[in-house]
Image (cartoon, rainbow, N blue to C red; front, side):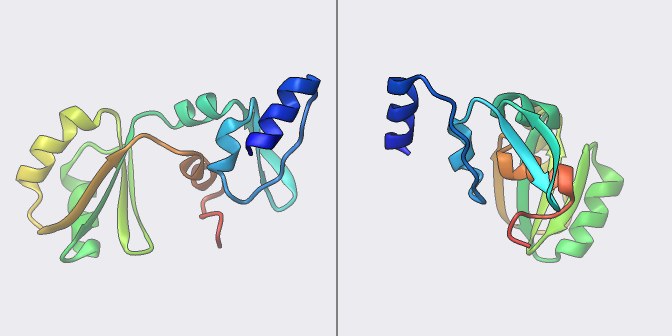
Length: 133
């Protein structure tokens, strides 16, 4: 990657990179998300992530199915789904959300992670599936 960036800068050229590792695409000026051979969106990495809005909360519980139902009925989440063995919730503002969420969730938590959206989240949002499927 360092070599590619140096070459691009030194020669002042446009480079096209294809990858299944979206973290590699973070260095790009623009990213095109393709699915089934068609471009479905194209923009800067920052703009694509901003389109998702909010923060991502990933959690595991003693009973993910029960917790998902509880989250969808009791809490103000933009969206929530189980992806593999983890519940993914998109919320407008995790700082305002998490404190009450932890106190009020009846299903016991076993893990919790809060983060900003990534290009993997963008891919999942636009295609409805993870890139590894």
